[in-house]
Amino acid sequence: MEEMQYDEMTLEDIFKALKKRWLLIVSVTLMFLIGGSVFVLFFGPVPQYQSSTTVLVDYRASETEALTQNDINLSQKLVQTYTEIIKSLTILNPVIEEMDLSLTPNELLKKISVSQVNETEIIKISVTDEDPILARDIANTLAQTFSEEISHIMKVDSTSVLDEAVLPTTPLAQNKVTKIAIAGILGMMVSVGLVFLFEYLDRSIKTADETEHLLGVPVLGVIPKSKAEGKK
Image (cartoon, rainbow, N blue to C red):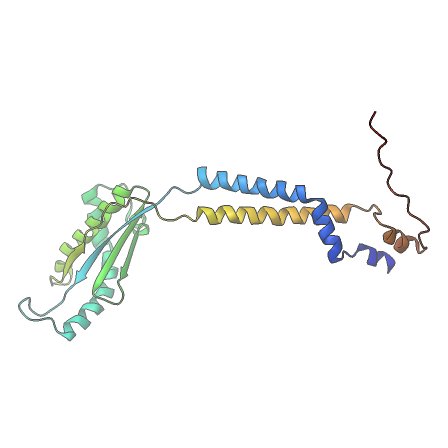
């Protein structure tokens, strides 16, 4: 039982251990920070650029008639159908051929994101690529091809390009600072773990209280550490 009490660390012991090995904690944390920074800045993923275009779905019985609420409701329902058509081979294959892309339809599809804008009749087509010019051109070609093909697929001419994609000037955020911070936190956790490991492996007696616990007898006196003699 006495040995078990000796092995237990109090909160004061923990603070003392951390204070004693503070240099280890700082060194390991800095190593992880520097290593994480080098990896993120020089070996991280290639920056990606995104360019978007919008297409308006305008379905009405006749172009000369005013747009009714029924036309709006139908247009909103068609948006869901059109979203899937944009991602179909009927649209992707002509885009690949026209732009002479060295991509398969599945590879191209992974670069494309199609969504409805705030439950309106507007479809947003976004393309992500490491080449900003290619991202813009694919987005515009997709929108144009879709507007041309939809009249043959649905037998109606109900779409128009609202906004063309423009050249993106900044890459998508890659959370570099967050990743570096995570590396620093991980380094601190590892260093603290090492401190506890070293303390556990260190079986030396450090205080008079520990001596009393181990031997079961009171300590009669403590010899202080001698100071170095005067300078020669």
